[in-house]
Image (cartoon, rainbow, N blue to C red; front, top):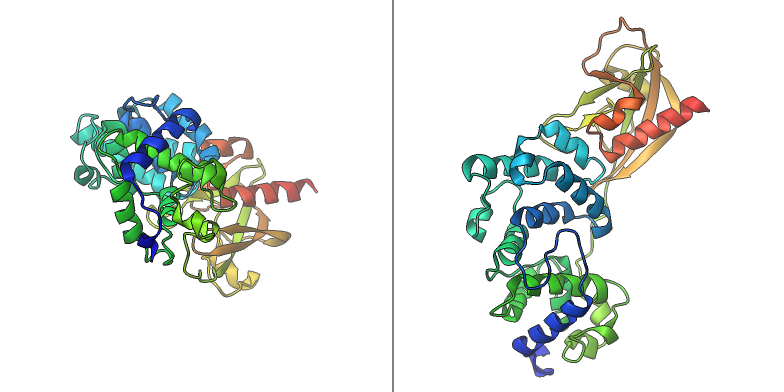
Length: 358
């Protein structure tokens, strides 16, 4: 049915897209000027950071990493704790661990040189199909089909693909393959990303400004804003737990490191019970506390949302003497910034410090 609509000429549309990109493309700190190849380190670093994260959030982190570790070898030589601390607040912390592991692999086994093929890049820690294709196209100027969420949306609307995600992904990739030109691979990929991010947005797309508005089948059928269709999402479960805020007379707070594998692996945390769907009583939670103490529950808790579940944590406070022993690290609040504390833990810290002042 869709093929009976106006024809789509890839070469013509690619030329129009690049004209639009030259005029209206975004200026971003990890991009080279149009027509130039980019540093693969900058492409890789930005693409890892941009996974599941907005451009606005990533820019200060990217600039901070680049100022501190200007090459992949510099990043490889950095202690993992420093990398995790610099990453704190950006979320999805497995990316930071993989980032460091990948940098070490490139520095140790490839003398600081990035692979130039998708197959070799896919062997690196944390590098998936999208990131590999982006590096090949943008940094090395080779043909690659780059597919992110923006490009999927553009393809779904251009060709009026009404089957829902994720099942339609292969079809959208095939459509993007037909639209990939024989030249300007990096500019084409970045132009498509920008088209989706600035005009072909999830809601209220600016079709009147789009260089592909005339042949766009989704626009012609009046269904562009509804595409790509998505299968109904399952409701996220809520997990519950109790965090233990332990303070010494000198003001130091007990922190501990989470296991290297799993959620927030290797990050620092305020000790807590396991997170589960059944509520905890304070009496039951004492067995999970980092030490024996007189625990007092705070009147408030915190809520945080991860990819697959919501988390609600109550907070119990205790004051202990310097003689009390517990596994972990005693840190004064003024020094929290030097430790890799994820956002959920910073919420607990903010709540506990605020309640202390009241």
